[in-house]
Amino acid sequence: MDFKSRLLNDAVEQMSSLPGVGKRSALRLVLYLLDQSEKEVKDFTQAFLSLKEHLNFCSKCYHITEQKMCEICINPSRSEDLICVVQDIRDLLAIESTQQFYGKYHVLGGVISPMDGIGPNDLKINELKERIVKENTKEIILALPATMEGDTTNFYLYRKLQKRKSSVKAALMDQSLVAGLGNIYVLEALWLTKISPLRKANNVSKSEVEALTNSIRRVLTLAIKAGGTSLQDFRQVGGEIGYFQQSLNVYGCFDCPWTYLLAIYCL
Image (cartoon, helix red, strand yellow):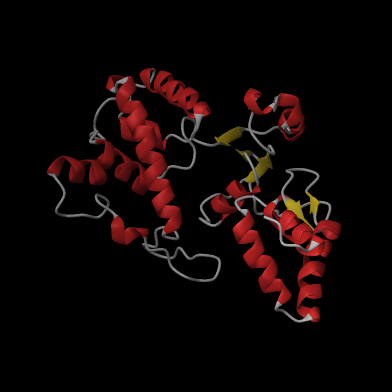
């Protein structure tokens, strides 16, 4: 596009450099800003300049903060024994919005991608290793994307389950195997996969484990979007209740098949 104006061209070029913003969208945003008062445009610009100047990365977990360390890392009520490893800050914020995790985080700053020229040394992996040793961390949760790395997770979970003689429900609720899954979400995931919670974990096939992994992701994603599950006193940050309990297929359902009711109340 040639707008016959160097200033307009430059503004559109800069705006279109943002992720997901094409030239047409960039032009619309630039023209919108032109319609605003000089003070509004200055305030808009100053907000981003201040963000860039004063916002830092936590020296411990690499979350964003205005101080040397973020509020999560300095919070004494957060567990020192548990670290959740995430790809980027967006994942951290998504997990925090559930109010279900009370450990601490480590932001890698990406994932290993040879096609994009990103290797282990480009991420905060060495810092994580040093932190684990220094803090004597007891448990690590890898909350990384369900991409090619997810296949590795499927295989890992499969091998772990094969060694378990307990029920599949008990195995999934064992925090040393899969951390963060409680009674409600385990039952919902098993229901979606059509696996009885009474079934022995070492009798679950590899294909069923893969399907179960997808069901777990689906249930947790839907629960996050619904703001969590408010059965008693759970509340979101702003005091609102969660609504996922309205979508439960199994937990607390008296119309479910008797095998599931037995699992809910006897396991």
